[in-house]
Length: 131
Image (tube, rainbow, N blue to C red; front, side):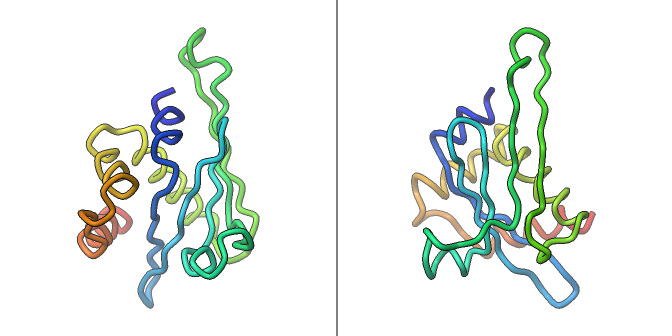
């Protein structure tokens, strides 16, 4: 539940994807009631309405209160993302919104963008990505 309520407050976030030749950025956008659409940041910058999703993350919280169970589905819908990258992106997204410390960065990105340090953020994410 906290992931969905936080996502409703702060619907956008960045997800760097690291490869041998460097990295590229993906932006996630939360769509109520329980979906995230993720696209290349550059495509989104050019035209948000036409940016093609690379993957989607759906959160099914039907049993969250009754049984303490939430199901997550990640669909890779574009060949630009490998399966292992999709898994890492999905896990990172859930951590970013579900973990109190990580969510501070999401909150800053959405509510105080001038204070958000992209370079420092990418360095931190790269250490986690490669571990």
